Image: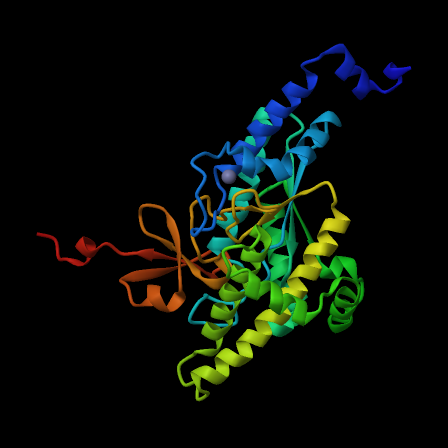
Length: 345
Ligand SMILES: [Zn+2]
């Protein structure tokens, strides 16, 4: 008998059951897509309700709704601070991370207002996945991860949790953990190089385009990190090294993506990188506003009109003041208005 299955019986009892669920799923996706990041070169969808953008995700959301479960998101992000002091304040999370985590928790709470079971977001910190490639020490990755967890707890961001490579391979041999990851999920470097090449062509798929964007972005960040004052190496030698490192980091990152997909098959995949219309991932803003920098590659600056991200060296050229947090650690900058420097009339 059909009614044995409660979910199935609802379908037979109400011909509009699926329509209602689909509408709710679209509403949830529209809520998320308001804060999406899209590739600039792409046709920009004029609405967060774009059906092509929703299409790859709708089945996972309707499935969760039918089971009355939380909508689950995964976001590989928050790897650890860049090792370059010209970009960041130090190796620990600061205002940028805090603002981003609060924003992501708020996003889940917005969903709960329209869908009672709500949503949860798992931050899949990828620092340990490529720390050796990008030059972040293991200790700094650990300290950063601990602080992120602590802030989530202290600020009561109940929709957020973290998952990282340390949870997957439970021992302290991080090189071995990465080897295990690559052995199981790693792809061939020549195939990757071919995909990056294809991504620059008009006929490329959204995934190939994203791969190329990621490669260019990573190479740029790696070159920046080696272009510190006093560097004696030539620009071309640095670029050559960073291109190879970028491929290595992408292989690790893709392996991490595959592991996450296997571990959380029901989750909607978010990304910090801009995505094309109809992509399998949803590019998401971190501060609730569009910014091409991330908190771990920049410092947070209070302009008096909201918070923005800037490279450390750039804000130091401005009339600004370093603000410490409650623990006395450097946290963010505040721009000082020109008028406040003038003597009173
Ligand atoms: Zn679209």
